[in-house]
Length: 151
Image 1: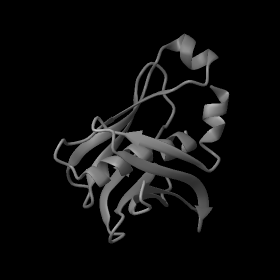
Image 2 (image 1 turned 135 degrees about the vertical axis):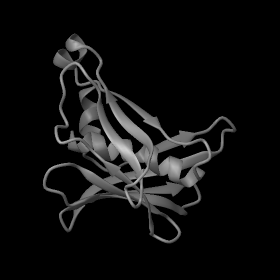
Image 3 (image 1 turned 180 degrees about the horizontal axis):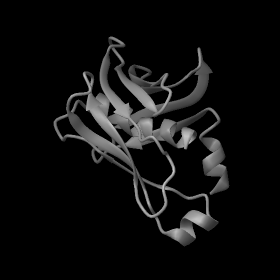
Image 4 (image 1 turned 120 degrees about the vertical axis):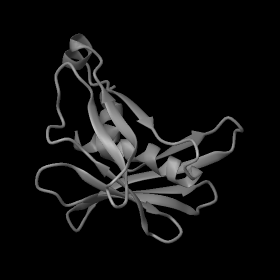
């Protein structure tokens, strides 16, 4: 498990396969670029599906989810003031780009005292609307890897 946690900080390649067995590729090189973290998501053919950029913020983690084709911000992710919690989930809200409407969430689920205290394993859940564009869905799944790297 420790290797999985450290792998988040290193470049890597992940495959997401849907039920129809078509592949989407997540190319995961978190790197520092002008004091912001970035993660890019690509299809197996090399087309950029989207990217996630950590926005500068004093108090809470903030992210922009960008479209691959245009680079335009399509969603925002807003984290809690405290990214560590005892006995409850840590929730990152997925919001519309104007931050007015909550459309989903990325949750670090509380897994119990023993697991939290004695292992490096974490449980995450991602919820989003069913009618969301599949490229944005793949980008939101990839956002979980970027969030893991800041927790």
